[in-house]
Image (cartoon, rainbow, N blue to C red; front, side):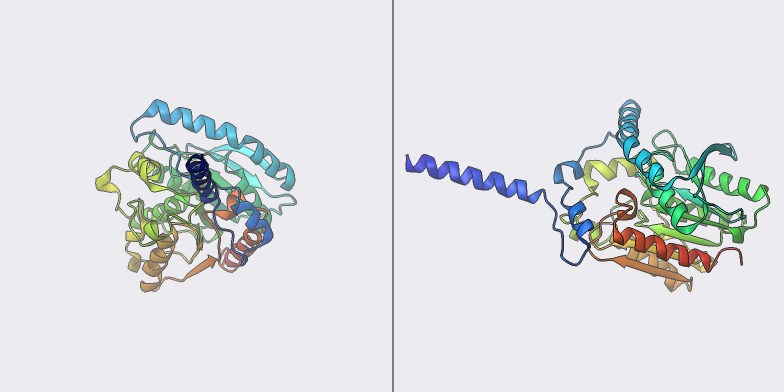
Length: 339
């Protein structure tokens, strides 16, 4: 009887230890709002297996599910900030033209490339990034609804971003009136597209803002290993790996337009602000990208946030840390656009 009771206790303790392991640490050094947010993450959700790179039908299903899942949260964000949103086509590419409440007419515009590991989300399901950004910077945001992988690869996707920027120029804007920002995969896309612009002799925008950029999609970098247990959102095996392969063939994954940490910045690049958290496996991406730019003499700032997870500014746009991050973006852009 005693042995059976002991077995039950041991099993219970093991079960509880696994349950507690699903709750990621919430350090006292972050805001109470951020602490509450961290406690909502689970290992099970983080480790979700995504379709193989070439499984088109499975990707369509997952993409549709994500759009439906995020609809209510994005609608809530729009209700809170009350922007004007217009669906447009620029350069043959679908975009959302987002003007903040009380927007004042200006040629200045912020191009946005959304995250989602190149395979997920859209300009609509990432309004929770673009709308608060428009509100806090006062800028008109053009959210690029680029074709998701595996339906398009990196060559086509980067071309779509360039087409949108060229269309904005065709409307009469100067490059110093255009900036670009992106988060996660969108950060890698923003930087890769600017490198492509430069290399094609098209000039470059006034400034670049990268939130937790996926600057190297090959799982290279110290924190891919050291922070995997701490990261509440990102997981590489059978998740990000499948996305990387869907976006670029393995032999292309270190191309600078795909993984811009490998870019040659001695040829020039706009002033850049990189923001990231200390609780994400992409921290090495941010540090390595910063070093690549700084070593080449490019004006760059690495702005790190204690205890913050991947793109905290997006899914938790209302916590104090996110508001501070956007305030710094506003100051950064104000100093560099329209000069």
